[in-house]
Image 1 (cartoon, one colour):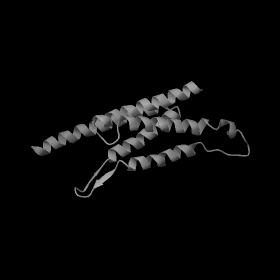
Image 2 (cartoon, helix red, strand yellow):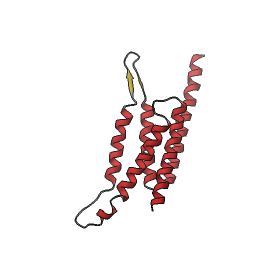
Image 3 (tube, helix red, strand yellow):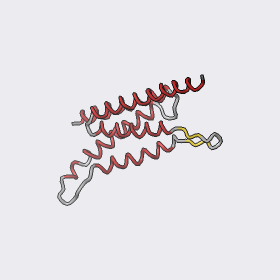
Image 4 (cartoon, one colour):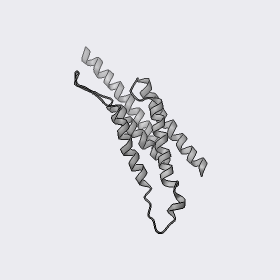
Length: 148
């Protein structure tokens, strides 16, 4: 079973790293290492939550809810994401929202990998990458059109 867990965190790290590479390429606040670590950490939290207390879970005197740790990952990642959001009052501009949302979805991808849902995690990663790249492409098209 340990090999399966190692595979789960490895796939989570790779998928998170792929999104992080796109962010790194665009010179955004959080890049490869941050996305890599968030995805891998989320997967590890999910595995520990679901399987780490197996010996204690067999007791009829106690009831365990393995989803509680996953729920706290969602809350905790908001703290990290909030650190990437910056409001520049002088320019009346907010930046870092896409990076914060990227960290949020990378945490979800990590949780999916930790739960063994590889197809869902891979499909989500591909959708995130398509969304980031397509959005960037269309923004450049609109920007060029507006300057004419």
